[in-house]
Image (tube, rainbow, N blue to C red; front, side, top):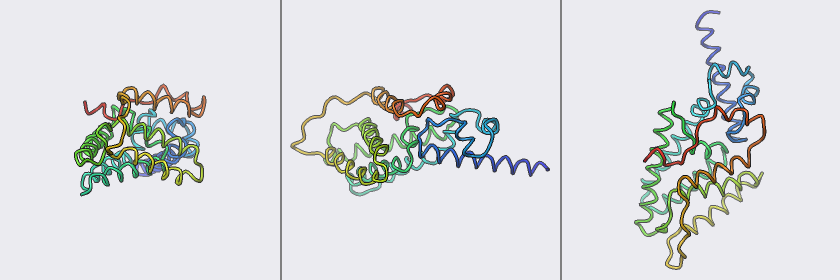
Length: 237
């Protein structure tokens, strides 16, 4: 087999690995092991690690298009002539992405130093979200004490619905979002909210939730190679 044949085989393996990773991360979350991904892709673990030497590298490539889509959603919300509708639609679509892909919300709190595109897209999304929130507040439609970290709590609550809802997860999701968006609306009768969590506290709560839902020892063996977690807005500071 010539060089072109070797390159074609390598690219085919790479695509198989990425397809398997997307499928497993979406259904099981990011705690699945590299061994599980190799098995699903039909390649040996050494082959997987030649293409992606760390789980961090695999996660970054698997999710970079998803994170770009998340940033696009936030910027699209800014184009909505109705600031509240733009905010609410963004929240609903974020939840829809989480409903379809369990790993999506998790990677928003991870750091991928080697992936400049990933970091750039996440920063673009965070900056747009801050503007979406501010725009809805200035229009008097979103309560003034709503902060970006409240979105992390929303995703945490929604994660419970996704995990427990089974075939009815979509219906539970819609009901939960209706409650949460109603609570977020500005109202003269609204009671002040308790002090919001800091970015680090919100991140810590999300990490504890992930640990509570971790599948077991097989996945834990890869955690030493997993990327560092950080808050959604850490890169913006």
